[in-house]
Length: 448
Length: 116
Image (cartoon, rainbow over all chains, first blue to last red; front, side, top):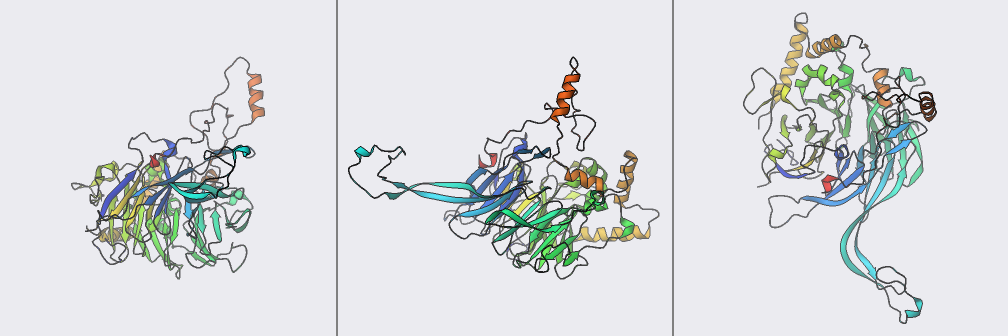
């Protein structure tokens, strides 16, 4: 099982930390809806259904425990979005945070974009560890002094104080989306970002919140003719003119903003041909792409549909270069998965730092890793039962045939309420963050 | 840690087999489809089509017309107000939602348990 080293197939994963409540009674607000490391990996942000953001910071490595990398502890937490009701359209707007994206760090402060269904916000997270003392006109508690008592003049000085981390909303980007926002992506130019809803994609300047440019519009004139929606969108990691968006029909379109202002005409369309004989009622639903992510190199992109993960070479539109089955055994359960709506679950996927391994979630709190070089895959589980510090995670196996081996779990015993939709991989190290319904697990590579 | 190369190969082999023995073996997907159609005979043949997508686009729609509500209240002086069925209808149904039906919108004043 390879790691960030790219060639070592002996990576073992250990439990590091788990955040969140232990009790089984999960409040809806506590359901984690997004997880994202920042560009250095020092910060880890989560968003939940209650509209709250929690940011964890990695402690510097301690000399006492060289065998594990620093732990993540709470750095800041704030209410990002509130529930709203649009009276004009009779529309309830959830406060659930759909996505968080970090901006590359430019100065001492950290910036992130968080979005719910309708509004994107730019948050500044800054540290304050000094405060001014010795004002002439004010007392230490802030009350103004009686001017008659001021007899001398002094220069206020900054004195150290306990670290305070403040989050403040710097921009609110509102009223640009009729439909529900599913993606935001910061451009490599660090000046613009895109936001995508079911039918449109808009381009924003981070400094300007009162206007945005529409760059993709797939809304048909007659809504009866609607056949597909946009499911995800992302900017290329280093080509600031290029972005991709995926659809509910399993296609990915790559657009070049230099070609025209409105990118309805794609520059490339990636679609795997389907055997018409194999087509069923479920085909289109399970081909719907729930996530698209460029590799760090920018040469490849990965898509997640209901049953598989596909890697595409941007130079080849006809078919993916690699396909990995996440939980093929669910193909014979599609009927019940349609009835309980699980077939519409939107799983995300992520790359490791050097693009050699990809990861995605599944049911029963299982998550899967696929090593592209070694052609190996592993299934691991995020559970409190394996939560002894630094205990190595044991690979899990789902038995598909009639005979169930010891330690295997049968398909019918899988808990479909325990889904891992959101995972994130540290940009440089073998540290992963895995979100179950309301808990955040952090696993690290076993270091000797 | 065992690799699961065999799994990918087995799937390929199976689909090849299925093409060969099409008359006798139905793909798991198609047998699931048959199961679904037997349970819901009125299911349309366009699964990914307009209906499903429109349902998705209309998420969050809660219809409440205060005029209708007050008129209904005025007409039914002695009887109970019509209440909504326990299941929420996604597309406008044949009943008028009442203020009692809409869930209370409370902003989260409680801090996240992840920070606890």
